[in-house]
Structures are given as structure tokens and as C-alpha cells.
Amino acid sequence: MPSDSEGRARVRMMHQFSDLHLVPAFGRVFKKKLTAPEEVTGEDRAALSEALGRVADYVGSQKFIAGGFSLADCAVL
Image (cartoon, rainbow, N blue to C red; front, side):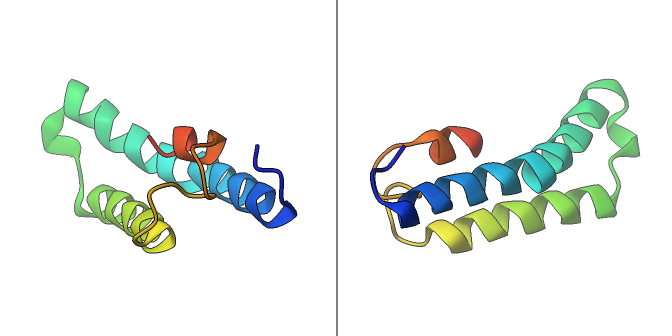
């Protein structure tokens, strides 16, 4: 974890975002692709695209989410 409070907050925030939005969206698309590819809907793709876009916007041009490599980076890998 980062030593500063802002860095720690960024780690917790991104980890929570990953748990609540990124992983569920990815999981839906991945599971359907494996079992029944024709069942992947535009809504599934849109949810995943939105979650990935939010991560990209949040990270911007930084190399890592919270300054140095942290749990936040692991959460979105």
C-alpha cells in the first residue's frame, strides 16, 4: 500500500470499482463466450466497455494507479 493517505484511498477506490463493476462485467462476457457465444448481448459488451473506459480515464497517462505498483493495479489486471 502507498505510504500517503491519497494513494491508499486511490487503491481502495479502484479495488472497490473493480469488485463492483469491472469483474462482474468481464465475468458475464467471458462466461457467455465460453458457453454460448451467441448469447453475448450488446448490453453485456456496453457494460464491459464502460468499465474499461472508466479505468482508462482514471489511470490516464500514469504508469500505475496509485503512484507505484499496488493492489489497485492487480485489481484491474
